[in-house]
Image (cartoon, rainbow, N blue to C red; front, side, top):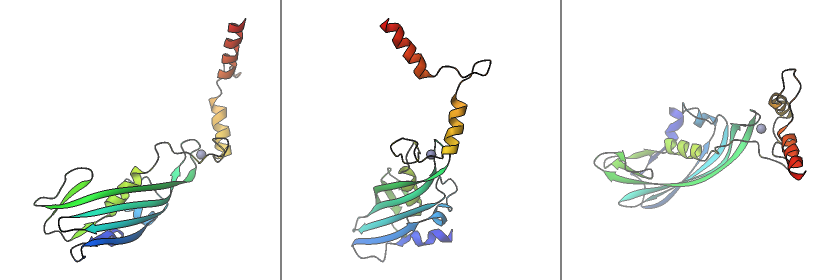
Length: 180
Ligand SMILES: [Zn+2]
């Protein structure tokens, strides 16, 4: 886990006020996490830490590209991601997560490792539907060979192997019936 050492921030030695840190989140970062959905990435993390007497406020600003698998054609594509999230670290007797945004750390704690939070914020910014970014036609940038195969498989055939009428043909027939 040496890769994640550089994400340790020794906040005890810091002066009060804002401190800025910049990190590159790449494939070596993501491979430290067993359940990652990201294999290849070119993501910048700008972390702003504000230290006061009572707490630490951390702003995670994430921007870049991650390689995902397209739901439509199963080929890789680059997905743009961007997010801004804030976490509050307060001091207490027992460390625990008070809420999604508020974390209590022990009074004698000296470091915060931000890697797990950065990892989670990147994953939260991934889209639910993963698709090649569209041109004029939605599937413009998908793998054409795979799409052709998929379309062939989607054509229904009758017992003799002849293609059945498409949904559009059914609709057209219905409309003609109504008009007559
Ligand atoms: Zn695709």
